[in-house]
Length: 111
Length: 262
Image (cartoon, rainbow over all chains, first blue to last red):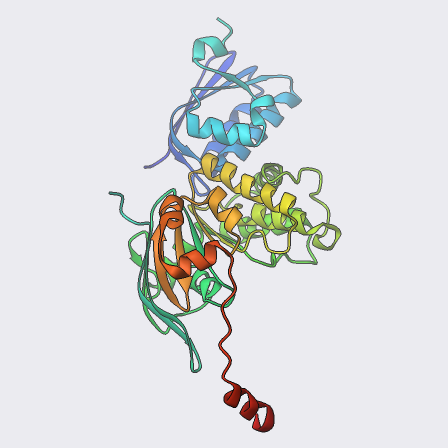
């Protein structure tokens, strides 16, 4: 399955929706869009992973890089809609302790 | 029934006049852990080396994900190999590189990823095998169990679909060895891998394997579950399970002849 990455932004929030498989060869496209919004220092970055069917370590590493860049300017970087297989990779690497993970976009916004 | 991820058909290998593999037929299914069990020198490591293309068999076929692996175009073979991780018996780490550099190497060689991403991935892999904080150590500075974990981190670097392990517990004490077994179980669950383990350690087999293939003198003499193996009345399987040595049959005349003229 191909990868699709869409970014929607307003003044405060960058909402990045990823669909399909994030692997060694497609994750640079995710990185490109995350780097673009961190460069603009968006206060809230929400990564929607609900439609991600597979994510390998390069995808996870890309998210870590995004989190690190966002932390530098004290923004918030939130993941929503993690599927069980992706969540297990996060737990194995203890990444569930460093990321803010929410069930839905509304919860990510603190509503 | 699921289509096998690896199909081995009538595989033969000889080293000179020594016929090591004598017509192996074996199916390995997605997401299972198959242990290839057998005595030292029975050809199990040779079989594993065929699966990663390190050795070409004398004849026979290996299909990996439906592709005729032995006869495939080098480009297709390469594509398949990138998704197979290998944990070598002696770890096979590069001694002149740090642990992290060892893990980064396949990613630098085979992916278009930026070095910042690769750096994070290597640290994640080391965290997953319990070697966080040892990134800058050299292999010679690590214990046997830690070297094995580092080699496992490198084998996982490219997020393989298939992980091949050659005697993962060899040379390790029982506690460290059990740690490696548990790690394999945990990694398999998290990454949905197919694992092929070559070993002669029964305890390890009964802990991690979903199915077992018993190799004896170049032939597969049993494939089945642990329960089926324990119930088997095959004398060779019983001998293996009971860890009984071969009974030595000595021909006195022949022995004397060999001492005098051999």
